[in-house]
Image: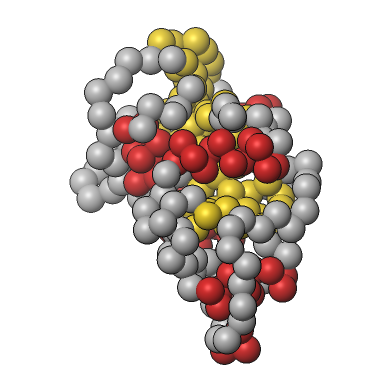
Length: 230
């Protein structure tokens, strides 16, 4: 079956953090600009984020009214609403993200018009899955009660033709991919900032592994673009 090439693309502080108030600083804003620039350079078929990141960046906590779908009969298995040129893959195992329509609309061309694919478990709320069908959001059943990431990647390739996937956090999702040995390349925008205690790491709960430096390039605003490959 094979899987897409997975590139973990993130902005990281000098102390290895991916969250914090540093985004609001001048150097943080410059690092974000560099991040989006590299995102567009990759020209990937899809990007993937976890539930918390999707809420913060796209759904902003909105929730649909699922009452009309309480008794809906939902066919078993995956739902492919359409084929698209670009996809937004949302890892949301319980099925809770509040999508309003089938695509992401964003000012940045690296995210705009991406067709949404929800990654859920078989025990996700059937009313929620019925709602996704009515708005044309695709979904993949990635496991019974926990996600099988290798299985999910295989389906992304076979069902949607995704060959290159940008994994863009957060740290918990990144860590899950890293522990499963599913990351082929790590692309880091290293921001010249120390975030401090209490913030999330690039790989939460990661395991020991070795990557090899492929690119080191200075970016506008003092950031450094680093690319490591397996």
